[in-house]
Each structure stands twice: as structure tokens, then as C-alpha cells.
Image (cartoon, rainbow, N blue to C red; front, side, top):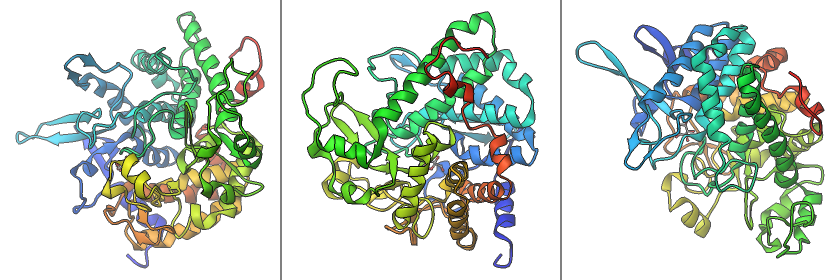
Length: 471
Ligand code: GLC
């Protein structure tokens, strides 16, 4: 093992994690670790499969991605009916498993949060599915798949669900705790950034994929309107740099009035600014805050939401630059020994007790609560390259490369600097390996990153303040 090139070793793990259903490759398992602490690591998670799928797409292996997209779409027939309510048809499962029966037959069992630890809602699955479908169409050129009636219906149902009116007063999407990669209670209920970045990209994907027919006219209009509202809202309210921090520090409170007439619309109390952020934010740096609500800013830095915002063009060029300045200035905190820190800083003491419900797996500087996740490496490298920072992208990649392979692809690392292998981390975690493959590929062939079509079409930005849009 020690002499093997880490990228070849990563490919070997990827091959070994492919799962088949009725003879066809349909996905990859989360971890090939016989000692994994939880049994669901042998399932195929939608979010974990995304980097596997991107590797397959870049290698021209379209079949497995197509099978996966089909299968997840059809799995919705398994949505559980709970007493008193049914899931909306747009909801897609967090994961699925192939069950092999004694008579040699096979069946599928999906999890819609009805089996998952803590019963968390898999809101990100439907968004990743759309983003992946768009990447598949862009790379393979197979538009016919997305044009199929069942796919068009699926896209419509996801959009109907996400654009449905409820009690909401913001253009962001309201979700319960643990509705994304952080799928445990972590104080991320409400409007977590990761969901907003995914939502923006999912809207963009739907807009590209939904056919331009009269029956879709109204829906397409709503998608575009929501994209604009979301884009402007995130830019105004989530963005934090020194100038904005100063404004918040001097906010007047208890202001009443319509949007645009009051400075402190969410009624944020300056006293809620945590002391760490004041010294931590560099002069030339900035980031999108973790969450917002009435009287609430979650100042924690969440890597995935921020990096996806860059990849999906939810930040301006200047903001992307400032985000990379922050990474450069706070490298030890945000990357440490093993890229990438999932969130910073960790919650400790009373905050940990109240917001995680005393979760020992999410102890300070471990797992979701400030652990370091190699799976985020591809997103970092992608975002850094998009922002023109080859140096940072390469630095992160080189830092991870040898160690990940030698330590057998841990799921996460512990400690402020991510020096220790996570206490309950699996080994042979698929997305730790696929993230390294993608990082290597993007660094060598940045054009391939572009070919995946993560960015939002320029027409959106050009018509940002504009009139009727033409496709
Ligand atoms: C953990 C992670 C989640 C991931 C799953 C499978 O639950 O929090 O994001 O999808 O493991 O790897």
C-alpha cells in the first residue's frame, strides 16, 4: 500500500464501493469499513454519491450516474405514509440500500428520514439530485434524459415543494435542524447557509433543465424571481466583513418598518456578536454567516455553504476573493493539518449542551462540531480555482494527499488543528477518496471543473435588475 500512488489507491477504493442492483451499477456505499460504528454506512447516500458521480462523469462513465438518477427518482414511490401526513412528492431519500433476499432476488430500501438517527429530514437530497442531473446533461450531452416525462415531472415536483408558500417571510428556505450534510442536531435549524447555497444552484439547474414549453411558463418565471430575491437577500444579510460587522456593532434596535426603511430589519442585538469574531475577521476577509432568523445571526463559519456559494456564483468576484483571503489568513483554523474544517469555532460548554442536546459524537472540535472533513476538499479546490487561487488549492491538496491514503481514508479528523483521526470515524470512506481524486483532476485540468456547469448562467446576473428574460 505504502508505495502506491494515493490517487490510484483512491480509485481502487471507489471501484470497490460500487453497488449493483439487478446487475447494473447504481451507486457507491458511504464507507467500506467492516468496523463502521453505524450500520447505515453500507448504504448509498445521495450527497456522498455526488463526488463519486463527478469522477464517473469526468471519466466518461455515464451509465452509473444515469442509473442512479433514475433510481433515486423512482424511489419516491417508497415514501412512508405517516399517520396524519404524507411527504410531498418532491422529497427524495437521504440514502438507499440494496437488500439481497435468500431466494436470490433483490429489492431496494430507501430512507426518507424515517429510519435515520434522529429522524432528520433529507432536504439537500433533492437539490443535489438536480445539480447532478445538470452536470450529467452538461458533460454527457444526453439532454434526452432530463426531457423524459418522468424527469420533467420530478423537477416540477421539487420546484413546487421548494417554492410553496408557507409561513415564510424570507426568500431563503426554512428547514429543521440537521437537514443537510450536518445531519444531527447542531443548532442549524431555520435558514442554514448550506441549504441556501444548494437551493440557489437547484433553482438554476431546474431553470436550465425544465423544458421551455407554455405549460412551464409560470413556473419558470417563479424560479427566476426567487433566484433574484434569494441572491439579493444572501448578499445583503449573510455577507459579513469588517465594514458590515461595524454596522451591526452600532445597530439601532427595535426598528419598525418595511424593507429598505430600516437598517436592522432582523432586529439583531449588537450584544449577540461573539467576542471571537471581532479579532478573527481579517481586514481584507469576509464570509457568509451560518444562519439568520429573527433576532439571530449565527456567526459560525460553515465551510460547505461558503465554498458552494463560490462554486455556484452566489458570491460576487470580490466576495470570493475576500473569502479566499480569510482562508489564507486563518489557514490553521480553517484547514489545519487536514483540510477542511467543517465549521468554526466549535460549540463548547453550555452552548454545546443546549444546541446539540449534549451529543458526545459532536463534542467540541469533533465530527460536525469543528471536525476536519477530507470530503470537503474537492469543494475547496473547486472554489479556490474559481476564485483564481491555484496556490491555495494546491496547498490544500498536497496537505491531504499522502496522509489520507496512508491513514486509509478516514471520514473525519478531530482537534482544533485536525491532527487526530476522528474518534468514531470510519475508514475507507468513499467521499474522502473521491474528494482527493476530484481535487487532483481539477488542479490538472481546470477546464473539466467548468464542464460540470456548477456556475449559474451569466444571463441571470446580466438580467439581475432586468425585465423579461429570454432563454
Ligand atoms: C454522516 C454525515 C453525512 C453523511 C453520512 C454518510 O451522517 O454527517 O453527511 O452523508 O455520514 O457518510
